[in-house]
Image (cartoon, rainbow, N blue to C red; front, side, top):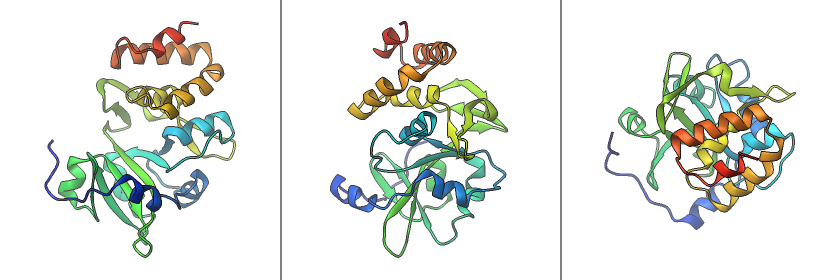
Length: 210
């Protein structure tokens, strides 16, 4: 689906400033306590929850939810506005048409204009998660979400690294290098299989051989 017209294009400096007050995982987890929809912390923070400690600064906080459950998540934050994001543009207080054409949603404090956390609205079929980059990769939610000792749900590191593999920015490479020694043989095998399917010939594949 093509992106709708409109939206604004803020520059990188403005975005950095507006994300300066981003929440931590425990803040979102407290507000989502008892929610029925499966959700989890994603991206860099998910890897740090897996590690059991914060390894680097994080410029934002991302969580993933089934697309159909977004309203249930949004209802837990009635004082905030949710803006849709795609291809470098932001649609403020996005309506249903824009939400349908995008998958990222930034929670914004309307009083300060600060962004607090990012919601990935993920494709799914009932209780089965579907990978945006390869729809043949489908897994039940209870297979892709693990929890910290405090009960904070996070995306399994194999999937976090699969998504980081596409851009392979310096922080993504650093995350891979830091987490790789902590992955069990089974996790490495699974990541290698998924990388081979989604990113054929990726440089990380050779490192997963060792």
